Length: 142
Image (cartoon, rainbow, N blue to C red; front, side):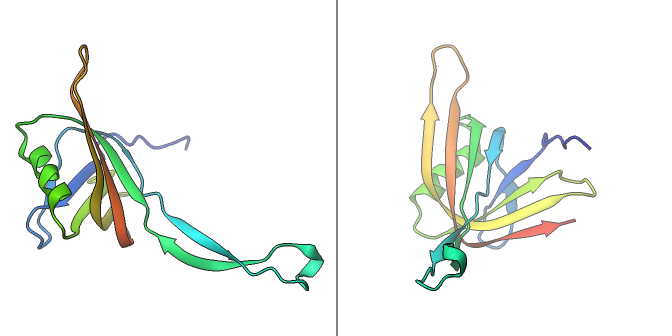
């Protein structure tokens, strides 16, 4: 197989704090999560063959970013403004291939670190949002 079409991927937010996930409307491109892990260097004078040595360090859940066809009247877009302002983390879900036997759900707690709106002269309004993941994201494969 050469690749899988990502069309239909969904981004959702927990609207109540109790696991009631609601679709964020008009989401275009989504990137992430971009997980990372620190490498801690432990090279010593007696490291074999003069090669640097490393051990595993702390992991970072990364970020998820999305571009939205912005509609100021849409309640899911308005909710992102509130999420940016609140102090507490919020739960979000990214669902790839929803309803497919190969569905993937990534659930994560995050804060919004960037919320940017664009109003071009000759194109659609857009909103860019970046979610900084706190803790470990959960990957559920169907």
